[in-house]
Image 1 (cartoon, rainbow, N blue to C red):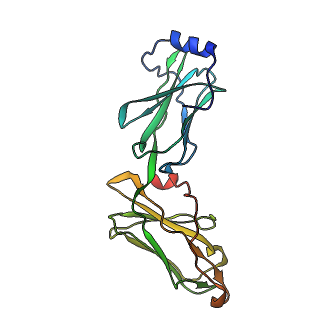
Image 2 (image 1 turned 60 degrees about the horizontal axis):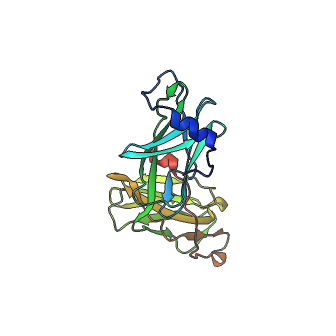
Image 3 (image 1 turned 90 degrees about the vertical axis):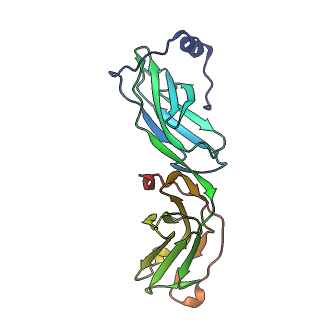
Length: 235
C-alpha cells in the first residue's frame, strides 16, 4: 500500500461509491514504474498512477492475475503504490484506472515489470584482459551457462549506453576498434530468455575497466554495483 493514509472523509466517500462500468469519456491515467522496469528480487518497488484532478481513487491491476487489485486514494491527482520487497511472482503487465464522480476511467497503457535475480548470473570478461590501452582494440564478451538468448552489457557510469544483443548461443561480443577514455568504468552483463521475458538473471560479477596510455597502469577488480533501470530494453 502507498505511503499516504486516507482521511475519514475520503474513506466515507469511497465506501459510498459503487463500482460500475468504464466511462469511455474519461481521460486515461498515466502509469509510471518509479523503480524501473527491471527490479532486483527483494528490493522495494514503487508504481505511480497519475490522472486528472477529478480522480478520487486509483486502481492498480495486473494482467496475469485477475484477482490482483490495489486501491489508493488520490493525493494531488496521483497515487503511489509501494511494495517493500520485489518477489518472484510480481513480474507482469500492470495498468491503472481511477474512480471519479463520473465513473471508472479506461485503463492506462500497460507497463511490463520484470524480476531480476531469478536466473544464474552470466559471466563477463574483456579482451585484452585484464586491462585496456588507449587507441587499441577492445572486446567485451558475455556468456551464460543457461539458455539466455537476450544479453545486455551496461556501464554503471552511463558514458556508454546499454548494449543489447540477441544471443542465440547464449553468448555475445561487443567490439570497439579503439579504446577511449569514456570506456573506463564498471561493467556488468545481465540477460533473460525470450520465452519468459519477465524473469531476468542476476547481474554478472562487476568488472572495473581502466583505459590508460600505459598498460602498466591498468587494473581489473571486482566491486559491488546497483542494477541500472533497463526499461527501454524490454520493448
